[in-house]
Length: 147
Ligand SMILES: C[S@@+](CC[C@H](N)C(=O)[O-])C[C@H]1O[C@@H](n2cnc3c(N)ncnc32)[C@H](O)[C@@H]1O
Image (cartoon, rainbow, N blue to C red; front, side, top):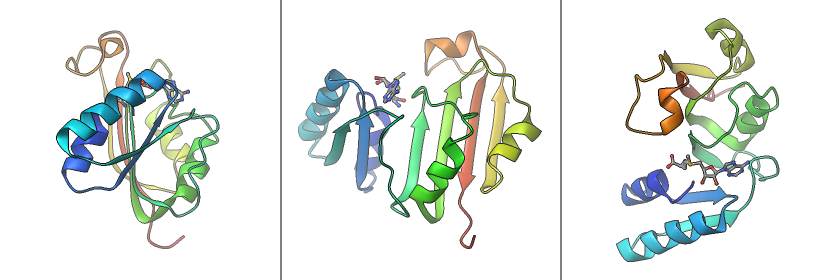
């Protein structure tokens, strides 16, 4: 969640937001911004590699520029289990991998792909400096209501 850029926005829209980061400083900044704005966040000091997403626990999982690899072969099953039926993943990152759309689609085949954009370096300039060097991948995935 970093310093809470997206978490704070979602909380302001009425979501009950849980976020984690490996950086205590980022969590402190997010929690401080939340209390200044009268918003509530639940935060954890944790890493992607070991964070327990649980089972059927989330309506939305937001992975923005967070160094998760969309081509990690273990990630789809992990996030599928964690979402409630109809739950959504929003994934956006600058990445240097070479997977084609069919390969990524196959990897995330237990989801419905609502959006897939693979944008040229420099096409997204407002978010993160590596977006200038690497393609930006945008994925919106939905866990089907029934398996
Ligand atoms: C570029 S910031 C993006 C933060 C936020 N998602 C946003 O879009 O504003 C990347 C964040 O990922 C965190 N991060 C990097 N590797 C991580 C890991 N393995 N586990 C947990 N957090 C990680 C960093 O500490 C940093 O706060």
